[in-house]
Length: 99
Image 1 (cartoon, rainbow, N blue to C red):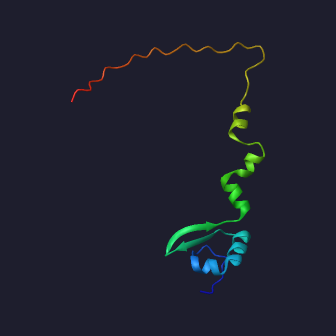
Image 2 (tube, helix red, strand yellow; image 1 turned 180 degrees about the horizontal axis):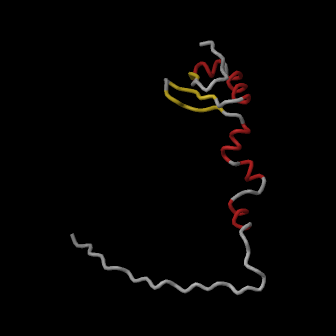
Image 3 (cartoon, helix red, strand yellow; image 1 turned 45 degrees about the vertical axis):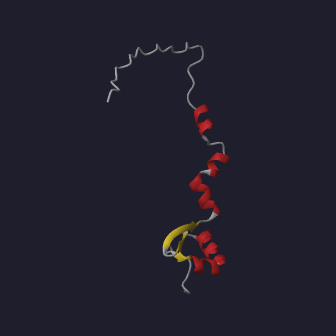
């Protein structure tokens, strides 16, 4: 098969192996390159920048992780008293386990 690689049409694994550099170049230029094995979807080759965006590695490097998000939440005003919550009065219900 000798078609251009820069499409989203799936590429057979044997063709992708034979033209791996072309497939990688196409993924770096634009759309992800789906690869099939025995006619079924197997993998998708994407540019490293796109992979980082999809996995949010770039935000983790910038300090945008979950812990930083929690620490960025608004703080109570200086000198305010902490809120005390009373415990809930929950009563268990009866459950009959007999067959």
